[in-house]
Length: 333
Image 1: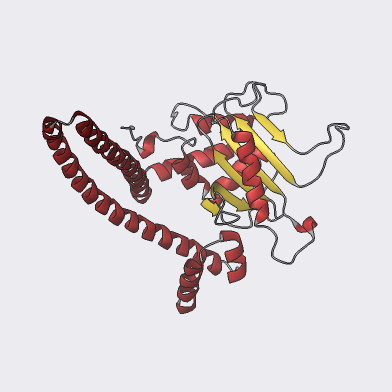
Image 2: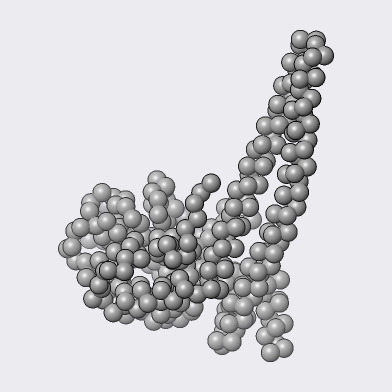
């Protein structure tokens, strides 16, 4: 069984701690300012695990942390612990899904599309050039001085870089901290990195966050167990099928007698699996209700910040029942 880290053992390369930390606008803003080397003012609260989908028949994605600044630039930032071999095309897909949600029906002026910046942070050198920072925009192959200026930027950050050219000390310290979040002996000169560090310490010692982390782990464990249960059930069915086939072939009653205890054990296993499945369904229902309440609360918070229902719905892409519930609560408050 996979060993669960404690909340205090997580680093910012772990999705849970990264999302919890970057949902705080001051941390997201500080990180973006370090990476981009300029002042950033956020227009909307960062959202973690933001679901995006272009159509029910196509794959949906969960964006790690999503936000937008006052210049209407949209940022999607995620940490990626392992090299899945598909990060360049994954970043392309994320960008295309974000783009697909930016134009309202009937608008045919593509110049109103927001600039989009996708940032992926990794503890490995994806492009093998020893750089900390790889920034990609669309340029003409025949005339490299021609930039397409389509507003799309994709950035890959490597915590193991060693080429200091054009890299700020703040960025080097940020990338070290992302991978070695719990290094208590490291002294950082960057005020912004120290700000994020202090916020992480508060999060790691927060009982409510610790409970959410435990619940998320348990939910993943339930689904893993269910997958294992389905595999075992399929194996038992195949075993019974092969056993019957062999018994007919040999024409021996002894074969069936030998198989009977195994079939009895399989039946007991099936009943036990059904009981555990029932328990898992109840737990899943509870977790889904908590997720529903959290999204309703985020919707409410954005309404209280002065945004219209249409704006909130546009940026959250919430289900109709969540939007309806949030609006009913907003009117009664």
